Image 1 (tube, rainbow, N blue to C red):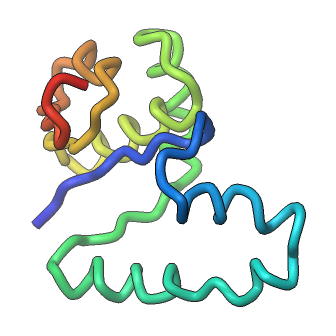
Image 2: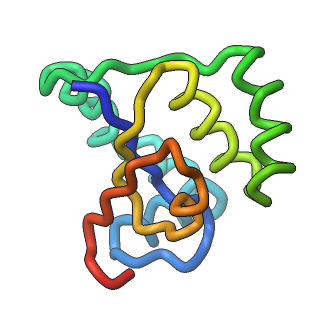
Length: 113
């Protein structure tokens, strides 16, 4: 299965765990070192059949054109560049900005957002 998921960066944390993750590294580095649940995520992603694709220099260069064309910020433009190179069209995201990209088949996990 090949699909990409956009994860928004920044903004107001929505869950207690994300508040901890955003707060601990700066204010409590020793406590941050004890957070380990994220270490299992890459293996689980591969186990469910999702291919992990690396970002290359050509993706970064292509993202500049995507930024100009669609008015995207860096992360969104880079995501679209990798999708195009990888021939991936489905994207799970609640970010409506991706609707402006004709080659992206946007799937919104939370309807109405």
